[in-house]
Image (tube, rainbow, N blue to C red; front, side):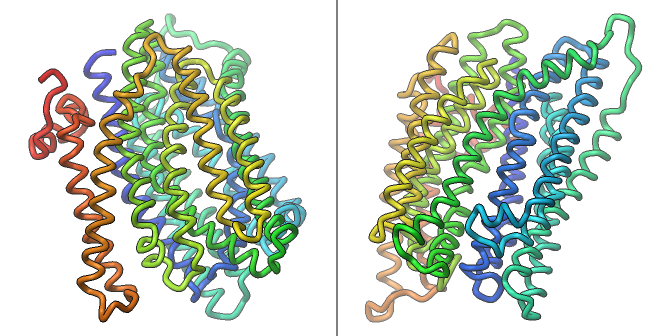
Length: 544
């Protein structure tokens, strides 16, 4: 791969990562107020989570794998300069995804009560029905996203996500607030909140369709560019997409079963009353909102790495593909590890400041999920590299192994009254650690040059150790300085201590990644305005 192409790959990831910051800020403005006692509270948030988890499962069945397949196929056709082939691939994929999405939307609409019953939460039925149309809408949107990503353009995907989140915020939060304030009950308030997801998805679809029409109009093709038949394109699309979809669907199914298992085990084995069980499950959902944050910053890199590696392999540059794979794993570790350590060390103030007055189990759950977050991010990157390398069936094995471990651990731990919901994040740690180990084994067998763990994890680990100690020490010191007579901190003083600790930790981590060369001057030169930032941080060259 040329240096220009490598720049495009990291530029796309940088654009997506930058937009992710905006998207997540908007998402927090959406979800955090929903969980407050004035709108949904812990119990109402449980109804919201049940519906959203069912939606996520069907959405995964409908879309997981197919945007990756589309991105791979379009990247290969674009590399070979076949514009007519590119357009036909997109049209076939759009039709397939619309059909699949329509089917799952119909299932959610017709069987919304039965699905709620399976999840042991009958009051989530209205939310499930309200969310059903979003599956079809997002399926069609994913076709446009896969097309643009295959062309190496991450901008429409990035801004489409902003449109989607703004729709959630404005429509969902407004409806939830109005329904809750007028006494319509938690089930209707949760349904109003989740309707924002459907509204936001429609906004994103309109934006993506208009973008493609403006910037990628269909052009006449020459005699040399005769596209393959629709049937052969569909076979190739399904051949690549189905194994990836199966792998993602297995994990989504495991998560869905696990969520239902948590509610059932809390009631049947741990002997909690239904309201108590829903409260514990609701606070776990709140902790998961924060735990998912690191993975959102890795997703842009996984989307960018697929066409980059595909392009290398299309041109038979296997060594360069291996270099991109190792670099992606290293950058994923640099991003994910400090976020996981931060959640672990500062779990108490982070959870309490954001969800003040919520169930006291929250900080413990978040601390454990901070550990799991790192393994989730590395598993995502490992799976993406395998899929881009044409080994889309191998992640299925990794995910099945991890899923069996997760369900087994949760079955025993969540069913214990003493451990209860705390067992759920322990199961997540075990699950994704197993997936990471299996993925690394498969990467060593697949890539021309196996990734070196010392290069991938060594420098980030040393940097994060220094960062974690700094966050712990600074938070403890500032808390003691501003505490009144040793009394527990109120929300505002706790927030002040937390932000001072975060600022100190970020500064120490920035210095350490330069000293340990976790990120080098060459890495920074490949992202927008990276050279200037590299000089500010005084990053050294890999060769110096």
